[in-house]
Length: 203
Image (tube, rainbow, N blue to C red):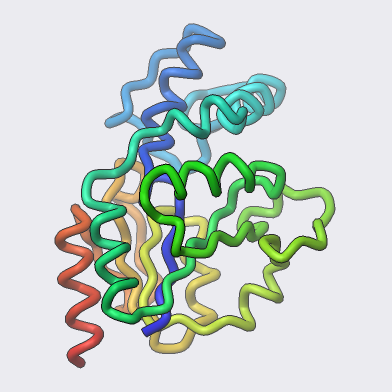
């Protein structure tokens, strides 16, 4: 089975850290549970310049390396690799955040899983020609049987993979999201998502 896994707020607790950064930079206090939108500019009510500053701070090496692992993530992913599944981590992080992101994965016992940076959200102003960076067209040429994603903004990309079952990792900003097809269903924990993946294997 070929498996897609998003990085932020699926493998690690990025948004929780961003609430801390927003408070430190601007004195803006938005509890994690009150993050209504995947777009943090909208959730935190930031100006364009504040949002740029927040994103730059959130992608500094020292911050990327400090994010806590989502409970059960590395254990479950390694279980899938041990079972012989082809697992890829597909992130919308900026291409220049690859090295600290790769180090975080290695430090969390996920060195066997490849990481690819894809411009999921149209944030990159140019494409790097690196083995780990992909255009959307490159990404769409891949195939996946199962995916784990939290962002409603990324759902449209997953529709390109025919019959791919999508586990939507339950987060405050996707509580009210409309799922684009019956292939999408919600999972609250990695244990639940592992069970969902098993159902795909057995179907």
